[in-house]
Image (cartoon, rainbow over all chains, first blue to last red; front, side):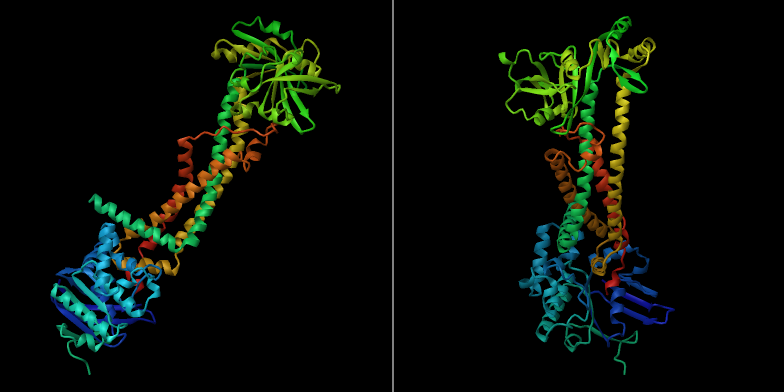
Length: 228
Length: 399
C-alpha cells in the first residue's frame, strides 16, 4: 500500500501557553513494499508522524492518504477498520494490558474479527513462535522483561497480517541479537510485500540493508538528508 | 455473516469474563449487593403472590351475604328469629345462623378463631376448604359426648396435641369444656385456617355462654350471584340496625388493606433498586485511569465503539445473571424454608392471626418477568448507556 503525506501540519494545544508545533509542512511518499526509516532525536515528531499514518489521530492541516484515499475524509468507523485490518502498530511504550497474559494481549486485535477460538489460538501461537516468546505466553504481560514485552508487542502488530507496519523505536528494549532478529522479521515482511515505516535512531536499524531509504526529522521537519 | 457475528460475540464475551476476573474483588461486591436487592424484591413478590392466592381461597369460603347486628357502631348479638324474616325474601338459597368469636389462649398468647356452624358435620367439607380427615382417627367410645371440632394447623401445634385428640377450653366462668379433634385443615389453606376451631353451633354457644336464641351473625347464600346486591338491599330494608356485608364488599376491604401494605413495601423496595441503579450508573460513568487506558489500547488496536459497548454489555450481563440467579434462588429459600420472615411483619402485621402459618408459594412467569424488568433491565441500561462515552475515548489517548 502506498502512503502519501502532503503539507501535513500538527499542532498540540494550539493557542495555549503549552502549544507544540509537532509537524511542519511534511511531504512524504512511501511506495508499496518500501521500507523507510525515519531518524531523529526524541521529541522531533517521529511518533506523531507515525500516529497520523496509522490514523490514531488526524493532522491539523494537510493531507494524509493511503493508496490515494484521504484519511481525513473517512469517518471514525472506517478509520478504526483501517487500523484493524491494514495497520500493524508497534508502540514505543508497548501499550499492553499488564494484567492480561502475553497470549491474550497478542490476540487482542483478533477479537472483534469474529475468528473462532481455535483459529485465534493457532494464530496467536504462530505469532508468539515467530518472535521466540512462546515460553511466556501464559505469563501476565506485566511480569516479563522489557525485551520480551517488545517482542510481544511486535507479535501483536503482526497477528492480523497487516499491509502496513509502523514501528516506533522497535528495538529500544532489545539487545543487539534480538534487534537483528527483529530486522530479519522486517526482511521477511518486505519479501511478503508489506510497506514499512520505522522510526528509530538505532544504527542496527537504519544501517540494515533491508532499509530502502532513510529520512531525517528535526523540530517537526522532515528532510532527505541528515541536518547539520 | 452469522458465524462472524457469533464468533465476534463469543470472543468479546470471553474477553469480558477475563476482564471481570481481573477485577474480581470489585465485581464480587457488585454481584453481592445486586443479589441482595433482587433477593429482597423477589422475596416480597413471592410472598405477596402467595398471600394473594390465599386471599382468593379466603374469598371462596366467604358467604354471599353476612348479616351482623350493630349497636353504637359496634357489633352485638343478633336474634336468631331474624331467620324467619329472611325466609320471606325470594331468591335466598340458604340461611345459616352462626356464632363466631375469638378465644384467647393465655398459655400460648395466641388468639384462635372459633366458628360454630349449624351445618357442622365431620363428613361435610366447608366451602373452599379442604379437610384432611385421615389425620384424625374416628372418635372412640370414651370420646362420645365430647364436642367434635376441626382444628387449624397452628391451633393443633399450639395445643401440643401430639397423638392426643382431647383437649379443653375455658368458658367465661372458667369452667372447662372438653372437645375431641376429628379433623385438621390442610396446611395449604393455612392462611385462612391456621387459627381456626370449627364446631357445631350448640358447642360454640356453650363455650362463649351466648344465650339461646342469639347468634353473632347470619350467613345467607343466594341462588343467583347477580342478585346478591339486590337481596342485600332487601335485607337491609327489612332488619333494623343490621350491617349487611356482601362478598364483594369484604373482598374490597381486603384488597384495600392488603394493597396498601404491599404497595408501601414495594415502594420501599423500588427505592432500594433505584438507589442501586444510581450507584451502578455512577460507577459506569466514572472510569478509573486504568480502565480508560484499556479502552484506549483496544480502540488503537482496531476495536470499534460498538465492540467496546458490547464488551460492557457482556460484563453487565454476566453480573446480572449471577446476581439474579443468586438473589432469586435465595428468595425462594427464604420464602419456602423460612416463611419469608423478613417481610411477614410488614404484610401480616394487621392480622390477628398470631400462630405461624405455612405459605403456599407458586412460581409464576409473569412475576419473574416483572422482577427481571424492575432490576436487570435498569441495571443494563445504567451500565451500558454510559459505556458509550467511555467507548468513544480517542485511541491516541494512550500514545
